[in-house]
Image (tube, rainbow, N blue to C red; front, side):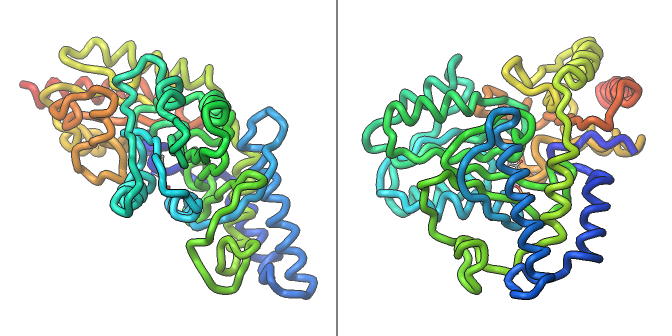
Amino acid sequence: MIYLDNAATTKPCRECVEAVSAAMNDCYGNASSLHKMGTVSINLISRAKQAVLKGLALGNPPLEGEVIFTSGATESNNTALFGANLRKGKIVTTAMEHPSVARVIDKLEEKGSEVVRLAPKNYSDFEGALIDSVDEKTSLVSCMAVNNETGFAVDVKRLYKGVKVKNPRTLVHIDAVQGFLKIPLDGDLISVSGHKIHASKGIGALYIKKGVTVSPLLFGGGQQKNLRSGTEAVELIAGFEAAINAYRYDYEYFSALKEKLLAELVKIKDISINSGEKCLPNIVNFSVRGVRSENMLHSLEQYDICVSSGSACSKGKTSKVLAAFGVSDKDADSAVRVSLCHNNNEEEIAFLCEKITETVKRIRR
Ligand code: PMP
């Protein structure tokens, strides 16, 4: 199998699988139990929190604040946005957000918040435009770190600083699912997900900066300082920690693979590349005119190649997110996303290019 759909999900790494298995055998105590086994679980969770804090900062001093473990980034985003105790006011966000942010902001808009949505296609300096939109009424800025469909990356640290200069009371939420461990992050609330970094599905985290208060989404036993009730998934948390510690993002390696892929793709007539220069090199989105995404996908599938049309979450629906990057509806209908991880290599890219070229010839004949 040539798996090139790592923005949808990743294969759990060996370190994660071993840590989950070890925790299932040895750390099965409930973290709320007062006996020794409870303490073992509490210690494991504390260690994993430190790994998340360190991972968010990526080489800079670890961020300060609280980390709560969740079922994934959808829950983290919902908790952050519904729980942020927003004063009614203006929300500044983008037209490229994942539905787990976009739909929540739609709800907040229905409840009376004014919402401004900026599309990257309209600005050469996107961070600057977001910062400029903040005024004294702005209660929240929510912006993803890296777009899941194109790889477009935001300078999150600059955004955070700039917003705070404009209005120190504005909260900044970052959906960092595709940016975690790839770019340095900062924010008042940051959402991450395990299954995008070679941990398992069903585990994520929400970072809450020191001094920021959030109301819980889930009520019950009061676990995790009353911020997220429910028995902690110790085994999945162990796997998450192991995957964070094992993760390496090699920008040069992905750039070389992207270059190789683009060098072949540009030979195809009527192709447009939807991942521009501000995009991280592990995600490459392109449209071959006249070849619908699903036809390309199923053709490549016959050779055991897994790629995606836009994002897996949009399940075949034409991506509105691509429009935010200036991609026409017609091109969005032909969009293919190749998303890489460190397990991919040049031979796989060469084979992919060969099969894409064959498919285009066959369908356009
Ligand atoms: N945000 C982004 C940018 C994503 O790519 C995804 C997953 N496709 C999510 C949020 C949702 O994450 P999860 O699957 O952990 O709920």
